Image (cartoon, rainbow, N blue to C red; front, side, top):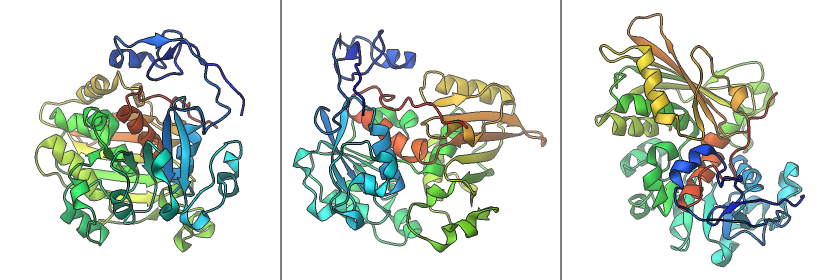
Length: 393
């Protein structure tokens, strides 16, 4: 990996522009901070970063995305990686595209030494994370990418995930980390439950509109589509090329596990119980996600009011973009990035609107948002290491 010099670094955050900010939107969040000149050599991922990270479950898609995104982070360095089935192997042997990264070999979770770790990304499967996080040192900051701490009501977790919650005491302290909505709570958290991909794409446009009483918190219809990577890296018959290619597959009809997570967030916004109609579809593409949302407008509300509210809510945000009027969001245009592109359209049925939201399911829908949350937790500008532009074509 080539070395690079980063000028005019933030004393706390580093790797900033000459005026001290990665992005002009950071200025509002960093008034009065001190800046210094310094140099950072990125050649050694392990040695020179002041925040030492563990990646639990590094052999999965979300784990590999964490590693990719951290390659250009000026402050976070990986000192521990686990992967039970790949223990003893290098990351390059599992993900050849990461061969340039100078990283420790993966070990089994039971053999992990956390004495050289300050924070952890937990990228383990649902149902396995609660016991593991319960056994981690209390000094660690944790961002959990599984669903194990997303639902505040543990009885709902048991209903939708089919097993008892194994760490109810930790659930009480977990903060749901939809960064743009819960930034202040994330800032002070020790354990953050990273949102699911579908809930991220749905809540970012809907929460501000419901809070502002611009759309009715009833009769909400959500039609979502995801790339196959959303199903994980495990070998499954339903995910074979011949099963997926040249077709669309609807799954989890009426019973997808992201339903209670979506309803929890929308109910919080409405201060009343919200029930949605949600149907996800698997698309023959590797990554990308689109949610098309059909809503009823509140009395007297017009489409322009929805656009204005979304503009006010997100004009100072780094990663949520309201597109120009009439522009249809495309999954291609967020590929590999932490962006969410949104737009609003009038329905042909009077009094209704159509909202389209697109993200990369592995970045803003998982690992990118996780890094965004850890930046906030550790006191760095949340865009640090995340200003990758979308990959196109």
